[in-house]
Length: 230
Image (cartoon, rainbow, N blue to C red; front, side, top):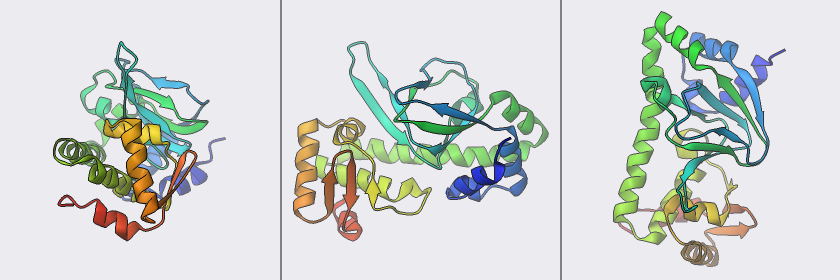
């Protein structure tokens, strides 16, 4: 039997879901089912037909793409309690990127058909889903600007700050579960450059590095280093 109460408690930690009308929260939860993925399992691939909306309860989803030569572009790691997949809800077009489980991952899945039926009956809810997409669009514009204008060090600091502050979706956290290689892929930097910048930040007491994790020791200092005019 679905544990809607437990799901709700997880999801209420996120800004988007917690600000939805209660009736919309209920509709999403009652239409949702659990989906468990093992490490590396594909959720959907670029070009796949739209299949609905997802929320991460445990683990993480790796969103990106791999070209013909095997070169990977990593856009983001989607972690609890984020929702994703809304682009195909709006345009009905195929998925834009690949999505794989980063370790054992548990998701909530709301099917596309259920969402379409809900929105046919309650068209005012389109605005709530538009807010979910507009947040992602805003972050994408920030990332593009950073990629074009900022040197590597402040660009890396800004991305760490965004992740530590939950991209505006959750409360700030001290420990980021992210490998250096993944951070390098997100920023289109070499592993060597990324490692060098992280080591410098560690030497300044801003963060501490362990395998697969980055612990933020001085969030205020990281904010200083992430300033655009740094």
